[in-house]
Length: 126
Image 1 (spheres, rainbow, N blue to C red):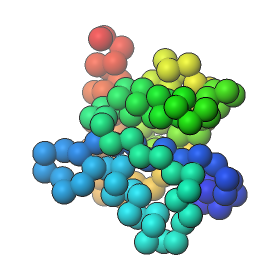
Image 2: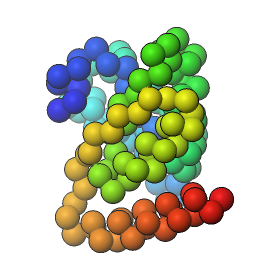
Image 3: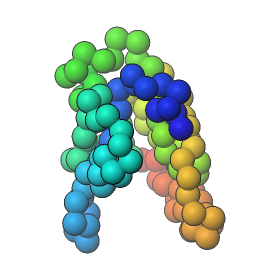
Image 4: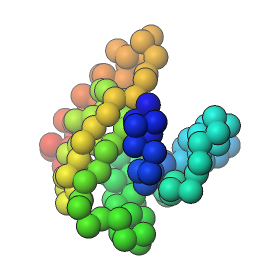
């Protein structure tokens, strides 16, 4: 829905490929948008990252290469439970982050919130 109201926005699809995955998370998202008829002209793929910090770091580098970091504004679309960490890693990269919550299945919420809490604790301690 964000892209419907911001059709010219540059989009970085970010996420590497796990050992048990057929394609990278970035490629899976690209395919999802493609099958729904989106114009992929402004889409960039970041497929090296294996962590939230890597997502933001590699994504920023891609945006820099395209000359798209002048304002430092970045809208990060991620699960609601993941917004805090994504926001903080984006700030570390020097971005001015705004977060938009994506859909996450209700039956997985408890697991993801607990996992995210562990990630926040590790982030603070490391």
